[in-house]
Length: 322
Image (cartoon, rainbow, N blue to C red; front, side):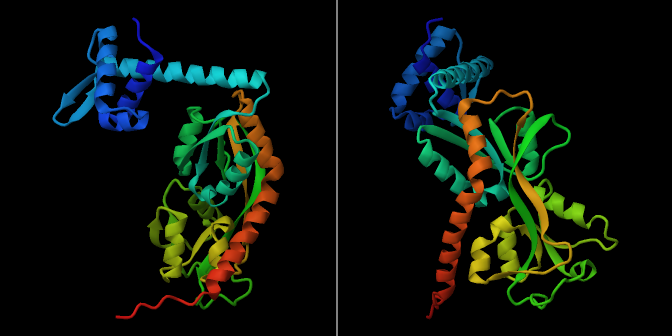
C-alpha cells in the first residue's frame, strides 16, 4: 500500500471528529481537499473507511483497524522524536499530564512557570476526577499524574511535593465562625455539601468521619469544588475542601474557615507514575521542577491572588436599579 503520513494524519483527524468539516478546519484545508485525500487512501486500502448514515459518518471495520494502526504509528513517531531530543539533551516535546479537578486551582501557576523556562515543551492536560485518574494511570495513558491520594492497588512510584490541608468552610455569617475548637459532635449537626462519589476530597472526608457514631447530614452532592463554594456562599450548608481552592474567597471574606477539632486535616499532593514506566527527559525535568520549585512558585502566586481578593473586597458592589 502506497499511503502517506499526510493521508494518515487527515484520516486520523476525520476519524476522531467523525466530521470532514471539522477535520478540514483542524488541518487548515478545504473540505473537498480532505475528501479527495480520504478517497485516495480508501483506494490504497481497497475498502471504504467511512460509511454515511443520514447526515452522520461512522468508521467501518476497516476504518477502525486503520485508526488503531494510526494511533500506534503516530505514538511511535512521537516517541522517536522525544528520544532524539533526549540524545541531544533538548528539553522539548510532548508532556502528557492528568490531574484531579481540585489540583486545577494551583497547577496552572506551575505550568506557566515551567513553560516559561522550557518553551518548547507541549503540555497535554487531562482534568478529571479520581476514579478516571486511576483508570488512566492503570492504562499508562499519561506521563505523570497529579493526585491527592496514592492508589494502593497499583504498582506506582509517588513523589510528595506539596501540602494539601483539608479545611471546614462556612458562609461568612455562620453562627460558628467565631467559635474555637468546635467539637466534631457539634459540627455534625450541620448540613454538609459534598463532592460526587469518586472524588478524592469526598473519600478523604468520609474516611475522617467514618469512626464517628453520628453520620454526615448530606444536603447536596455537587460535582465540583466551585459548585460547593457557591453553595456555601448561598447558605446551603458547610463543607470540607482543600485549602488551595479558597484563596480568593478567604481574601474577600465571603467564606470563612471554622475552627473544628482535628482540622485542618493535613494531606499531600503527589506526582505519580507506574513503577516500571521509563520517564522521558521532559517528564523527569517536570518531576524535578515540581519537587524543587512548587513551594516558591505558589507562595508568589498566592500573594498575587490575595492582593487581588483584597482589591475586590474594597470595590463597591454593583447595584442594578430599574
